[in-house]
Amino acid sequence: MTSDPSSKPPSSEPDVDPGDLAVGRWIRRALVIFPAGLVLLGAASFLVWQWKKDRADDRNLRYAAALRLEPTVEAWQKYRSVLDEVTAGQDLAGRLAATASYLASSMGEESMGYAVTRVDSNLPERASVIQVELTGRRRTRELVELVVLYGAAEPERAAAENRALASVLVLARWLTGEKVDRTVRISLLPLCSMSETAQSLHLEEIGSKDAMADHRRLFLDVFAAGPDAESMLNRLKQAFATVREGTVVTMENPPADEAEALRWVEAAQARLLKRAMVP
Image 1 (cartoon, helix red, strand yellow):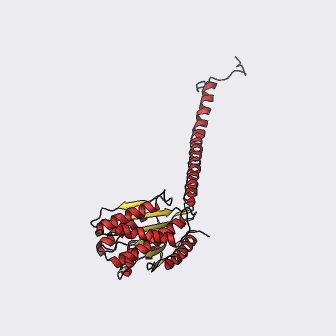
Image 2 (cartoon, rainbow, N blue to C red):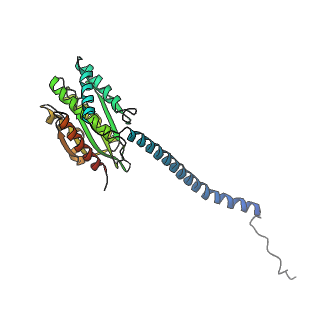
């Protein structure tokens, strides 16, 4: 008996429905396409968020720039006079509280366009630290910082500190709305009447917060008055790890009068903006 050559031996594999093959292909494609789509959607969402953020930042800068004023003797005298008034006739605690409130309101969004950071420390000897920033657009974590140490109990030294604070307010009004690559920060620290231990604790608290935020100080200018200014500067250097970070540190005395104050403001503005730009 001859076999039919066209006949095929029975297969041991089950018959496959072509529809099942099509479904399998779609599943395999989906496993590739869907993750890629999620990645693209996430990237698109980030770009939209960044675009909105940049628009908001630009709008804030334009608003702040509209508040910018060049330095004048009248502005310096006004700030110094108000600082002398808010601190007159009060005990040290009341004077420091009034000074911090005036500094915060003077540099706030409605006055100068800054988002003021006020940190009321709960350490044994309390202090209200005031900080404002021009946020860097390229290297946000690199800091160019100006620190003013104030809070002395002695009237003569307090008057010198008020001259320094008035100079910094004039400078801050002139800097507001500037576009910078690195972050420019102004920090006002009322630590001068504290014990050495309390000063170190407050400075270490600020330094540790910056370290956690991965901030690095490239430049640090310090305004300080009094016979212990050098020792306070050394404690500040230690708390901010300036040697390890390679920070360039300079210290200056408060101006003696309005003419010296304006010369300092002009030099400080040029120096800070130059340091805040990346070649």
